[in-house]
Image (tube, rainbow, N blue to C red):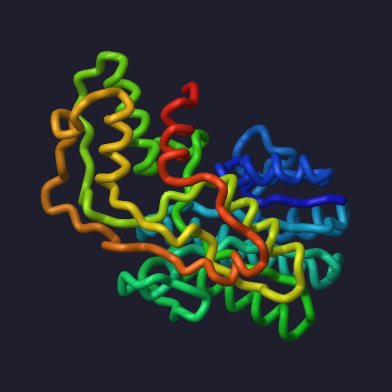
Length: 293
C-alpha cells in the first residue's frame, strides 16, 4: 500500500508517517521544506496530478497549511488549502478514483459560542483560514456526491507534542519553563490565561484520522478529547514540574484579546468508530517537558 502526504514536514505529518510505516504503508511525503520525499507545493497542479498518476496511492492525506488565522496568510492558505484540495480531488477523480482522501479541517472554522462543537455545528467564516477550510469541506462534499469519491474530513481540535514548534503557545510555555529551570531569568509573556481549550496529543489525533479513513460509514468527524483546560492550568503544571511559582515568571500582555474563550468538541462520532485518546493533559505535559531539545 502507498500513501501520499501533502504537508509531511509538520507535526501531524511526522506522526502520520510513523503510523503509516507501522501499518506497512509506503509514504511519499511532499512539502515545501527540505527533507521530504518530494519537495513541492500542493498548489502546483501539475506536480499533484503527476504524483497521483505515477504512484496510484491507496491513501492521500492533505495536511498542508499555514496554521494561523492572521489575514497576512490569506493567499498562502488559499493556495495551500483551497487550491490544494481541488488539485488533489480532481487528480484523484481522473487518475485514481479508488484512493481514500483525508482533508484536514479545523476547530476554527465553526461558529463558537463556548459550547461543545460537533459535526452539526454551523461554519463561520471568521478568518481567511476558516474561509479556506470551509471551501475545502464543500469541495469534499461535491466530489463525494458527484463522483462517489471517498473523501474524509477531520476537524482537528488543539493538539500538541514534543515536535510542535515554539510559536505555538503550549510549546512556548514548555520551552520557557525548561530554560528557567536551567537558570534563565526571563519573563514569559502570555495573553489571557482563562482561555479554555483541549490539550490533545498529536499522536492520538493521527490515530483518529486513521480510524476515520478506514471505514465507509462516517465521512466527517470532529477530532479531540472533548475535555477543556485553561492556559493557566498548563502554565501551573509545567512550573510545578520544576518547583517554581509561575507568578514569578509570567507577565500578561496588555489589552490582549483572545480568539475565543472556550474551544471544545463533542467527539461522540469519532468515538463511535472505536477511537479513544490515550494521552491525557498531564501525560502530554510530562511528555513535552521530558523531551530533549
